Amino acid sequence: MFENIEFANPRFFWLLLLLPLALLWYILKHKQAVPFLRISSTSGFKGDSLLTRLKPALFALRLLALAAIIVAMARPQTEDISTRTKTTRGIDIVMAIDVSSSMLARDLKPNRLSALKEVAADFIRKRPNDRIGLVAYAGESYTKTPITSDKSIVLNALREITYGQLNDGTAIGMGLATSVNRLKESKAISKVIILLTDGVNNSGFIEPRTAADLAVEFGIKTYTIGLGTNGNALSPIAYNPDGSFRYGMRQVEIDEELLKDIANLTGGQYFRATDNEKLEAIYDEINKLEKTEIEEFKYYRYEEKFRSWVLLAGVLLLLEWLLRHTLYRSFI
Image (tube, rainbow, N blue to C red; front, side):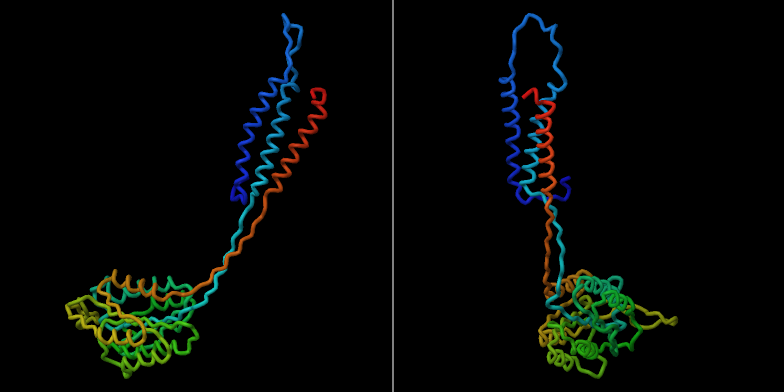
């Protein structure tokens, strides 16, 4: 009966402490009120009738009615809460991903590109209220998916990104310019590019700083990530006769000064990811920096349950009154 029930006035339950006192008062009064007669033998008298023995039930009914009234005064009720959320400040994000051959280096596990895709997928899932798009670049760039609120589309597109879809190279300026092109018409209050690379700009016909100037013109903040361990990394260095890569140790070269300049110019930040854990921490940090403002409206609906307790108390009192004025009328 009390499942999922809350009480608006629980302080009235203190009145239940009066019930044991009332019961004690009744017992003491009953002993004083019962007359007795001394006789030498009771063999001529029949035992008490059943009605006589059940007479205390009248007082029990009155106590139960009082308990029901106290529960009703405590106002039992159920609470139904409905929630509606409204995004008041959405963010449009484009993730620019380097897919050059160096992204197959194995200083991150199992390689840089696979590690990035896993962390990026987790980042996308944590942004349910934002629109996200993907740009892939190597020696050239293209839009893998335009900005969309459908995360399943973005996640599927991310899984499909692999090496070999573009000419090899690292066209940072092209990747950034394509990302700016995706966001320049956006009406979102906040527009963000997350650009990741593991090398230096060596391809493309748009200079990275020119692309950064375009980002500033359209009010687009850029977070840059340099991916790769310090020193040497096991990287593709040549092709085997069967077309597979031959791996060898290669010096990790990242144009950190360029990435810092792009981030500073556009109001973003530069990060360096040297292992899987650091890469994950960087995306978590960006997730904290770029907050979407959401309004949450809660609606409360209460359903009062005291009426059944009042009805129960009335039935008990009526039953006590009927018994007292019918079966027990001769005892009163």
